[in-house]
Image 1: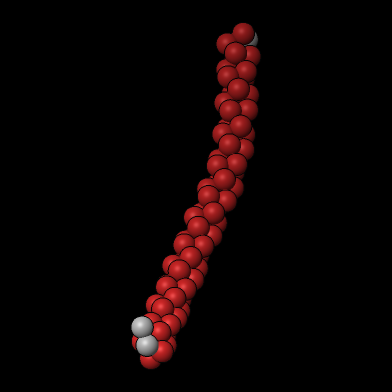
Image 2: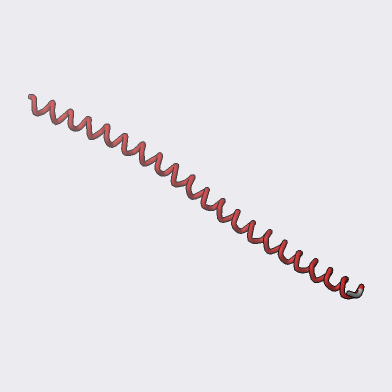
Length: 76
């Protein structure tokens, strides 16, 4: 191969490497952004689930109190 062909092959390989590097970087950044959004949604769901659990506990206590009142009234 001549020197010109070697330079041309080198330039083509460099261009292909640059395009691939940019593509990989772009795709990776998009995947990371999407994963961050998913993690944020999961954290929100966790806090909502905790709030609902607390509300269920509160309502269960109220129901138990109402049952106790009914029992007390039935005894009178």
